[in-house]
Each structure stands twice: as structure tokens, then as C-alpha cells.
Image (tube, rainbow, N blue to C red):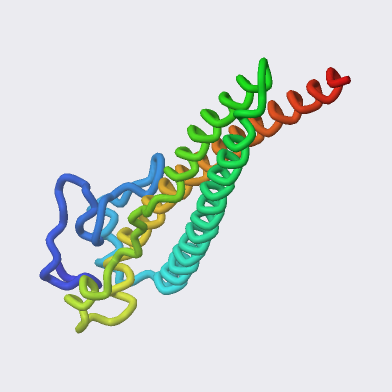
Length: 198
């Protein structure tokens, strides 16, 4: 097969997109068909290849910055849950009646919510594919040809990282909601005790 990809790149008849460096999926309803790749290759590298590559690179950098921010939030939530559980446990012994049960329930809730936050904090395998050593195999090609060859791989990395980031954000949201409910319960109980006290 002659063209931008050269004669040595086999095309995948099963539509996995391996001809352009990775799986075919680019989101719902979008895929890289081998016939499309051959059509592009026969007409040379599209003029917008470098621009699209740079946009994908910028988006990938933004994803990794977002991942760092979410990890920071998740770590702070884990510490906050531990601190709140420790404070409540120190006063539980001096409480009685409904207040004691609220305190016990709050500790259990904090433990659960804290575990959710820890699930968001734990290390996730983000990807920056394609790796430089993988691209080096085509080091004799022009830069735009290499970018076109691995463009779908970069799109796949964006999709994979997006799934991880959505999961982290969802877990952090659940943890914050749990913490808010616990804080509201403790506040209501404290107000009731103040009203009832002589």
C-alpha cells in the first residue's frame, strides 16, 4: 500500500483501527475505518493533521492537570474525614441517648464516605499514548506522517483518561454529599440538645 503510510503498514480487516495505531473507537458513533485510512493515505497527509495533533496534545495536558486537581481534592477529603471521625469519637463517650446514637452513626458514615474519597484518591493509570519509543519505530518518516499514523492512538488516550476522570469526579461528589449529610445531622442534633438543655 503506497501513500503517506508507506508500504509496510498492514491494514486491519476487522476494523480495529490498528492501521492508525490503536482501537477504532473515538466515542459513540465514530470510528476509523480502514477504507477511510486508505483513502486518506492515497491523497497524502491532510493539511490539518498537525493542528489536530496539537489540539489533542493540549487536551491531554489539560486532562492530566485536572487529574492532579482531583487527586488533591480527594486527598484533602480523606484527611478531613479522618479528622472529623477522630473528633467525634473523642466526645462519643460523654454523650447519652439519641445524641450518642447520632455520634455513632456519624462515625460509621464518615468511615463509609472516607472510603469513597480514598477510592477517588488511589493511583490511576493515566495514559499519554503513543509512547515515544513506539513512535521511534517510524523515525524516518516525516513528522506529519507519524502524527497521522498515531492520531487515533492519541484519541484513544483521551477517551480512556476521560473515563477515569469522570469516575474520580463522581466519587468525590458522592463523598462530599455524604460529608454534608453527616455535618447536617450533627448540627441538627446539637441544636436540639441546646434547646432541651435547662
